[in-house]
Image (tube, rainbow, N blue to C red):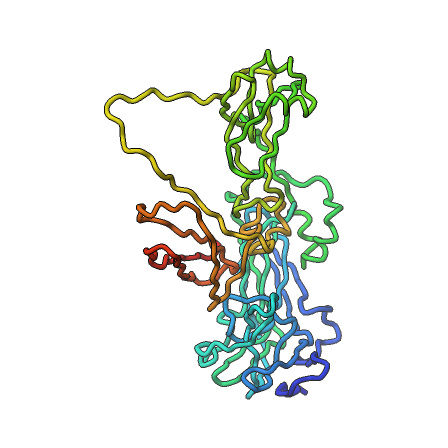
Length: 455
């Protein structure tokens, strides 16, 4: 018997309903059972028992499928529905297509389903608000728009993997009809494109430290082992930044945490353990990230240079350290030098009374982990990962004040630059505005800012 789901709020907060008929005695455990073919697989699906809860939306109890989304989805406000998924190991240079066959459905009429929540700031934290999108809930169609789809293949260490998604429940909000898939077959066709395979060699060793992850992730774990491969090591191109270091040489590390002009004296070198007589007879050179940095050498053997703090790849400050390391040596070839330009002839130009500068008002209050889950498979830079100031959601407004010194009011131009990073991979392009207000008689027009979703 299919239970009716229009229940009120549950005191315990969690209810479990059997939306599907029980599986046949001989069926495999779990919602998916795989059968391999010569050109793909047939995945038999039997819907499991679905955990649900109940939330109040617009004063009415609505069913909420668990686990509920914890962050805003691209379709926040649309009906929140359960999505099943499984992953298959496939050969390198191949992809898949998927089709749902022989589906069997059940239906429940008059059922209220909660929307996908959207996060909102509350007391320094975040809460989830269940707000219906009026357009979505007035639509006379079933959500989601597609019931089965697959992600682009990705590589996890030695294995090429594809993930298939299946919407086990569909919902028509205008009619309040909940349609659930009780069973069906997913035909997954393997499309081989050998010419697209990268330069690979078979994996000859077991990835023993990661076998548990493969076994838990892949529906065809045993079959997929034959397709594991590793990239053939290409000839490394010459790296000119590796030639700066002289084995056996003496180098002094200079930490720089702020942009500026720096001076290193002979006394400072001596305090660091250096011998003054050694560098008096040598030729100073300064290096940063394997590249020469120009110096000004003074008669007293002190050196001066412009140093830069350590910058992040996608944020103002690197999330590991804000300090750069410059390396000063008196061993080896002469380093780079500043040179004086030739004096230009003719009449003198206008006097320089001011110069453009930048005031950076950001505060590093939170470490954003990145927009997607690539940090699970990528040990390098993650898109968007780094220090951030604030999180903005639809309708967010914020005002921040900062001061500047010695403004040249004869200059009519000033600029405000705000850097925003999309937190949702597939969201629509957003539009924001920012303006400048202050004691200056001029007020800059609001600057239009756009943020694009990640590709």
